[in-house]
Image 1 (cartoon, rainbow, N blue to C red):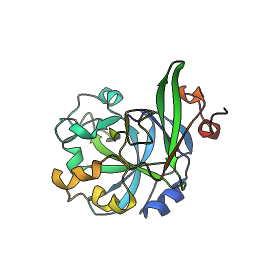
Image 2 (image 1 turned 90 degrees about the vertical axis):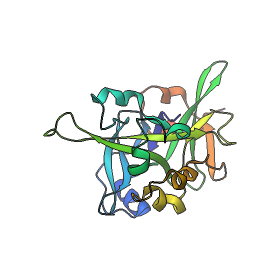
Image 3 (image 1 turned 60 degrees about the vertical axis):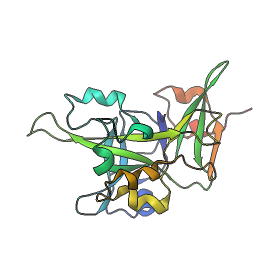
Image 4 (image 1 turned 180 degrees about the vertical axis):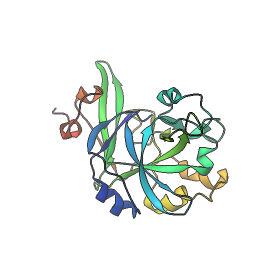
Length: 224
């Protein structure tokens, strides 16, 4: 699963890193939780690559209300083409959630221990995601929402947790975001478990488990 991640970058870094046409203002955050507004990269119908703020917690267009988003911050790659909540979005509304890193919790005899996972070279991770637009009435404002796609853990993550986000490598960004690529046979290979090479992980303070905790200290290695 993916329940918390880090946005320790600014809009200009996002624009330059992903060659975007535009990006909204947003603050740096070190403890992003579901239901937060997060920057999401996607391709418009006109073919422009942009970023928009979306609520983390997918609300399908057919939903009766936005409350369903509280249970939809993740989508399992194994069933994403079959589940009604995701099967249209994975064909037509794929996106990337840029992250400085993400947290995962390891079960230990003394309780759950959080770990921070990031790229060894400090580059942004591009978590595979889906997005949707929902509104309660034809004349109401659209709610843009998103979710992170997860898959089985790689060798680095396996001792920590059995799930992790799908991370799309730079060379596959264009194919993942292309709106005209809708065949599951072309999309499914992009949802493979990411390689452990290029990733690093270390234990961090359990303070990150508090939803109100914030600040750069949260990603610092736990003192031994």
